[in-house]
Amino acid sequence: MTFLRRKDAPKLPGSKRPAILVGAFAAIGGILFGYDTASISGVVAMDAWIKTMATNTDANGDPVVTTGQISLVVSILSAGTFLGTLTTTPNIHLLIGGQVHCYRRLWVIGLVADGV
Image (cartoon, rainbow, N blue to C red; front, side, top):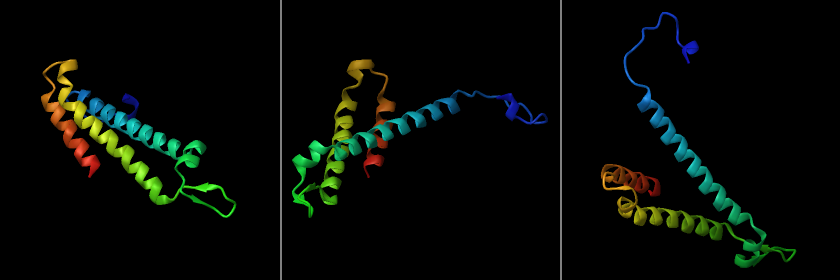
């Protein structure tokens, strides 16, 4: 991307790797958040789910899911992913080795911050 740099700009020493890693980490987080949101909205929009879970009907007799029920489903699914990652994280060293303690702590802090 040298075409974006000014001709008179000084070349600074350093590595581009940290910036690339941070960008990749943020992109993966965005993809996972979008996937989670799409999955939840897909479940809420399914006709079979609406017919099964609806407790009210509209004037035409069609089943209607209230906003309270939808918010409860969203909360339960989000809590499930949160608790699933919290229970998986302490056991990840069995899968990939014992050098993940600092990353595991950072992951748990991020999950707690996301859940709050």
